[in-house]
Image (cartoon, rainbow, N blue to C red; front, top):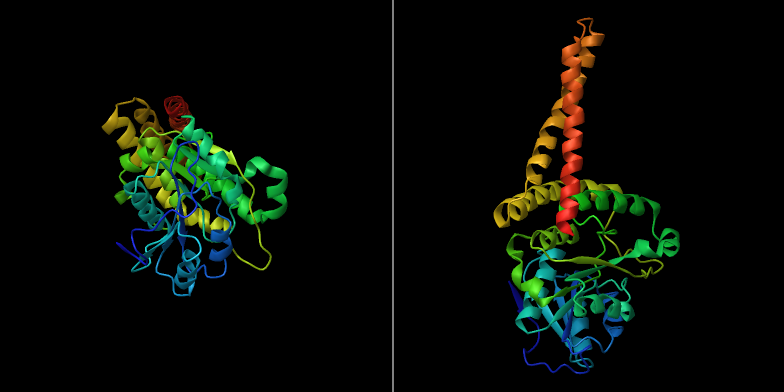
Length: 330
């Protein structure tokens, strides 16, 4: 899957551990020769090991990382032979970090957009046993975010977040596209990452899987670094939301089957599936009745009542399913 660009026996070279835990950092990177250096130069001593996963970059990024390793022996370069997507790059880092025995794995991008001086806020909930996975939430610092984040990206983020809440069952999270995260070794070891989404959209898929396996996800407020003249994010608002929507739909049905049928039965699946059948059926039947009315055929009272019952009952089933899902996810 990958090859390492340097020896396996690299000393930590500065890692001090944090509250008795061994901490690693995974940086998935593709063609980040401009920004990988400031990203690595701002890694605090809290981090014991730094895994830079080069997803088959075509620029000089690998050479820059190797040069930086001469000064900071915590840095390990892992190279994919072919481009597999940021999700797979993170999974590669996860598995390597767990295999090397690190207790917590932090993930940031290689675009110097995530302030590592705030990493303690991501680590503390995991060490204190309050969460298994922490993720950044720029919206908790709303006054700063709304000034710096483009409006179209805010709109796309809100749409994706709403869809992800339903797909994942994590109704308390926001800013689901944020890639600044931390995860425990136990969560890495228990989840089957071979079926996870590998391309852009992976943060939402990871949240779905974490909930399905019963792990706790917690938002952490964090600021974003925006550099003038640099396009650091690959997210393009509404187009991105449309592209990941099919993945979220598949993730929702997988979670229903895996969590509420395979692992443990819960009747909420009947509410969800009944609602997903009755509501669209009622809407389509209603459109047909409107067409008949305007065509002069006319609509009988019983047919109109059946249509209304399908819509109302379907909507109620979906709301009850969401309510039970929220309670089960607590």
